[in-house]
Each structure stands twice: as C-alpha cells, then as structure tokens.
Amino acid sequence: MIRSLFMDYNETTSYLFSKHAKGMKLGLDNIQSFLDGINHPEQGFPSIHIAGTNGKGSTAAILESILREAGYKTGLYTSPHLMDMRERIQISGQWIPPEKVIHYIQYFKPDIEATNLSFFEILTAMSFLYFLENKTDIAILETGLGGRLDATNVVLPLFSMITKIGLDHTRILGKTLKSITYEKGSIFKFNIPCLIGVNSNKVKTYFQELARERTPLIYCQKQVHIYNTRLTDQGSWFDAEAEYFSYQNLYLRLLGHHQVQNCQLVLLAVNELMKRGWMISERSVREGLKKVQWPTRLELLSEQPKLLLDSAHNPLGIKSLVKALKTLFDYDRLIFLFGVLQDKDYRKMIEHIIPLAQELILTKPQSDRALDPENLYGLSIGRKKSVQVIPDISQAWETAVNLAGKNDLVCGTGSMFLTGELLRLWKRKKNHIVYQ
Image (cartoon, rainbow, N blue to C red; front, side, top):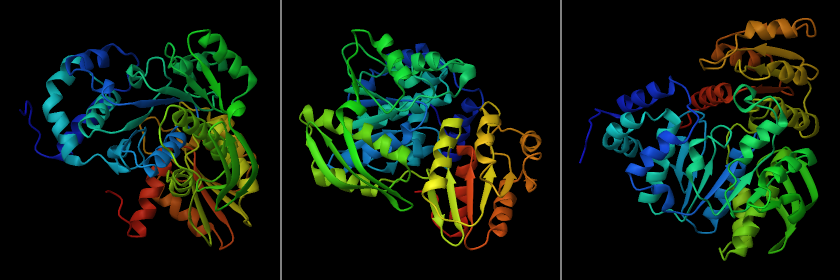
C-alpha cells in the first residue's frame, strides 16, 4: 500500500533534503520510536558498528571489500556522501536504486512525520529496511557523528570497532580528548566486544575507564602484527599476522601509512570473524585489499601534473595528508586548493599546509556551513606571497590546474563538500559516468 505519493525521484530527494536543512538531531528517542513501529529491521541481520574521528569510512570500505570477496552479501552504510545521497546505502558495492528510495519515502512518510525524523535518521532507518529486505549476510554501519546519541547506536552488533580518535566536532562532542573518547566509546554494548584501532595510550586509558568490566576491549596493536611495510604512491605492501592468519606481501590499494593502520584494525575484525566461524580465505583478503575503492582519500586522478584529492577535514586528517605528501610523492611545486567548514579547526589545518604550499588557492565548499575564504586569506597572506581567493570551486580548480607544470602536484583538500564537487567536475570533464 502506498500511503503518500511523490511524482519522481527529484521530488523525493527534495523532501529528504528539506529535512537535512533542519540539521542533525542527536538522540535516540525519535528513531527508536520509528523502529518500534516497523518491527525493528535492524535486528534482522548481523552487523558491525564503526565509530571514530578519522578513518571510519575507509575502515568500513576495506572490511566490506574483503567480506564481499569472501562471497558474502554485504550491506554498507556510510556518511556523508560525495556526489549522490544514494552512495550512503550500498549492497555488495551497488548504491540503493532511486526507485527504492522513492518506495520507502512514499510508504513511510506518515511515520517519518509522526516521529519527526531528521535526514540522517531517515537514511539510517532506510538502510536497515533495505538490508533486511535484501537478506544481507552482514552490514557494516558507520556512525554519523559521535556515537552515544548517533542514530546508528540502536543496533546490537556482532562487535563494534573504533578507529583513531582526535579533536573534531568539538562544539557538539566536547573540547577535550576525554570527552570525545567518551562520546565515541558510548557505542560500547554490554558483553559485546569492541575492537580498538591505533590510538595513543591516553585514549586507550579513557576507553578502559568507560568499558570497565562490561565491554571486552580488543586492541589491534596487540593482536595484529604488521611488519615489512613499504609505502608508495601506488599503494602499500606489508606482512600481517594474528591468531587465525599469517599473510605475506599483502597489497593495499588505498594510499598512506594511516590506511595501513586502518587495515590493521580491519584485519583484527577479520580475525574476530574467523574465530566465530565466518569463512574468509587468504584470497578474499588479498583481493579485497587490492580492489577496495574509497574515493577522495589520497586519490590520484592523473599524472603530469599530478592531481590529488583528499577529504581530510580536521587537523588529524591534514597531518596524515602532509605526511603522505612528504613521503609518497615526487613533484617540483605543490599547489593547494583549500576550502573548509566554519565549525572546523581551520587555523590548525592551514598551519599544517602553509609550509608545504608554493601556491595556495582558497575557495568555498558547497555547504551552508562553509567558511568564507577571506577569513583564511587573513591567516595566510603574511606567510605566503602567492595566495588567491577564488570562491567559485570550478574556477578555483581550473586556476590551480593551469598554474601547474607537468611535474607539479595540485592537491584539493579541507572538506568532503569540496572534494566531492572537485571529483564531480573531474568526472564531467573526462566524460565519466557520475551516477550509477
């Protein structure tokens, strides 16, 4: 039965984005009420729940790739999206079809209105319905913001995973590492293990205080040994050992040392699944690491000049980017195209990139929360002679590319709202298909 009627996909997405404009609501009451009314689809399939400041999307993508190669029908729920809202909900690498989005909104609009769901809560519930309807073997769910009050925190997963913790979203999650660790660690569930990624001893101590005796914590740095690591601009090679496997010369397609650290946590999840009887062959691991795609994470679009997109959007991410730029790539000059949201620690972010940049172009991401690039200009002009403010992203990108010689590197970074649009521009120029 269709209980509400939309004419087409565009009208449906307009309705959804009208909810987006009202912002994200933290809290579980509304989504719990909605799920109560539809018999809790999130309880109908095994899941893995991932939180963290940086790397949770990459971690989810790597794990999904391995499990898909192992023959499992995988669900993947991530946020935000780069170019199309449907990216957020995938089964076995395929986005949710437009007609399914229309169907769910048509049918459940009265319930959505009755429970006052936000954009993120609607998509979270939609992912649960879609994964259940399609009988996924396992779903990997990434938190949207924090953990404690995030809409995804209604699930009872096989286990949880937490990636690297740093300072981000401090206005909402708190201004200290301890408060942020508490928010992220509040995805802990009684007697359900949580796998902890590479983190400082201070963060680990905070997790231990929060878990106490109720949540078993398993640390990737203790359980998975990574060695013989070789990092290049084409990917990374390394050996890995844990209780249930020993692999030599693994190749990870995603670039950077931080992605090897994310992979260390993923391999801990593989070890945990194997312990529980899930069949994951060495071939599946190798193929999953080799084939994984996660756009705009140190993504090299072209050579001569090198055009690089990276969605680093906080100081921790920018530090990983800078490390990669110093160690992985050869170039004569580095041209940064930088845009950021106003609620980020943009002062620290630009402090990291100014020493490397021969040319700095400041632009404005496509978001209501975007920082006016003139504010960045004041932080930059005293330290760099060549700083330009070009608010229009397309014009800024064209300027950056035209400035580059064949041995130079152009890096677009600072926000997914910037890199997503840059990727769209690039695909349009190369006549690639943007939408599935």
